[in-house]
Image (cartoon, rainbow, N blue to C red; front, side, top):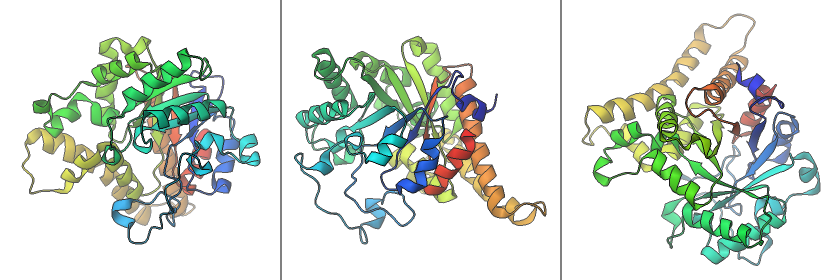
Length: 358
């Protein structure tokens, strides 16, 4: 079963969400959202007052602070504070799918009252689901996290302050949460919670759907799915698998950094004490994935058939990787996904998302 077939409405993966990037021009995304395979849109909770980078991706404060221009952060009384689902233009609103998932990030909420107000506005504007995430913990000046957001959202729904049909979703990070990844980081001494314990906490707080980060290291994602399957939680939650479409090695590295956080830097730090587990599972697996980009580029430089250009070959290779990732998540024996959350990020990624959907 190919991922393209799995994406088509009427199959078991009829719930296929496409992420709306506020940093990429709407024209670059419009064609992808017009495709009938995509039945929902995910709106990130991002600092949309920040200027975009030249390639359409959000600026990284750590590396681009010198040339980034930051207007004042919006107040809760301004239109800029509103959730993205409440700020759609007329043409955009008509073009987007009817299912709207609005992300609520604790890192961009001032406190729980601010988060509640954000949720009410999102639900009033037509959000079908609220995706509650902790976000960037380095921004936190409070103890607000995904669990607190889920409990607050459930309380709002129980009290009738948001519609009873609004679904509550949480996030999971399979590659970072898998027990094998915990061993690789040497986190056993910190008594890291198991993947199943993390998910169970979120379900108890009110989550009904889990939307995962992409499986940037497939072997670790398989460990995560097996652990969730063994826990018996598979029947208690809807599983939407994250599918990234990086269009360059640099983009793939950004996804690795996003998924693994600060521990990603350890991959390149040869001076840091390590053991065989770290060497194999962290450096080995990640570098193997990145080496595939180099291998592809070498092949494209020397061994293409006369009727294929480097550009078309690279595009086809990128799309095939996305298809394989989707196919594995949707058809695996352990904790198969009920749908997909496609994250193209760049204009080229949206073009490839359209091709994969075809």
